[in-house]
Image (cartoon, rainbow, N blue to C red):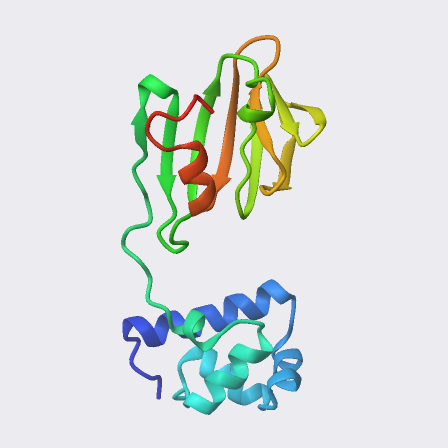
Amino acid sequence: MTQEADGLDSLVRKRVRALRAAHGWSLDDLAARCHLSASTLSRIETGHRRIALDQLTAIARALGTSLDQLVETASDDVVSQPVHDQARGLTLWTLRHEPGVTVARMRLTGPPPEGPSALKAHPGREWFTVLSGTVVLLLGDRRLRVEAGQAAEFPTMLPHAVGAFGGPADMLGIFDREARRSHLATGARER
């Protein structure tokens, strides 16, 4: 007899199977890692057996995930809408499951600001990729050129600034709460 395919139960079963497949493991491989029999795992995946909490905990651990992630319900809000700031050339997306983290697309039109007072420093890390053009990254005493298709990641305690080189450049950056406050706050210089 097959267990009822309620939403969460069915989703958990599909996740177990998908994670096992993503690892490239057979039922026997997963069984050895979570100390269950392959036939028990098969019946769990196909809905022919109820999933006990202790089994689910062992399966999650073996698959390298948490019980919370394994039973998390699917979110209906998959598509997010950006916020556009035309005046500053910014498009922002907030990541729902990473509080304080923002993804920003920026159009840089001028060179980076010059002088020690123009460089910013704050706790955290920043990552960006150049979508088009060339970006100049001032990082401490270094001046780096980041071309389209390349990315840069650095600790933000190093004084830093960015700007365009040889014409407009578009970049996509990921900023934590401190970086967003420092670089993307209202009235901040185009970044």
